[in-house]
Length: 162
Figure 1: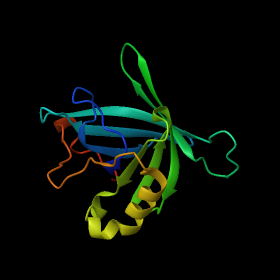
Figure 2: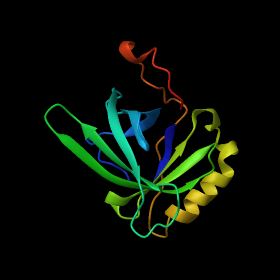
Figure 3: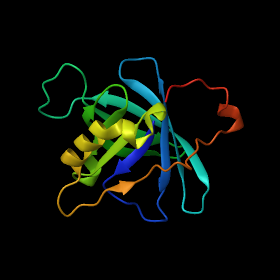
Figure 4: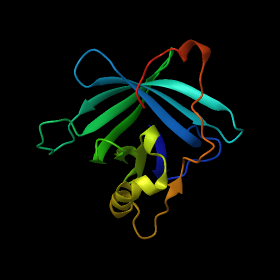
């Protein structure tokens, strides 16, 4: 999946500046995943890191399935908790819209690789704008047609769905 839009803009020096993608692998155990997340920095260099994801329910949520995910980076010397991401919409085919809880009401919209043509995304974009792009806020395009998934030699043979 590619991050298509978001309602916040990181600084040029921050990671995840442009062309953000995530390749998802289900791990053993319920609600456990690994995301190989990649992005292009302002200097056009692509970075890729493994993020560990566990699903959970947000406080007060009464549904059967988990509606949020906690994202962490486990580095050799430390663990970085990126917080909770609440699923606010999914059509289970083309797009997923997440609320980034650590950034207040900020959102991210992810699009599955075979649906990157904007003409196929009218309902996803409409729901995203209604739920996330409020008066006074800005929508940022993260994906562009020049974005490519970075392939490291040792991950080239790894099968994963996008």
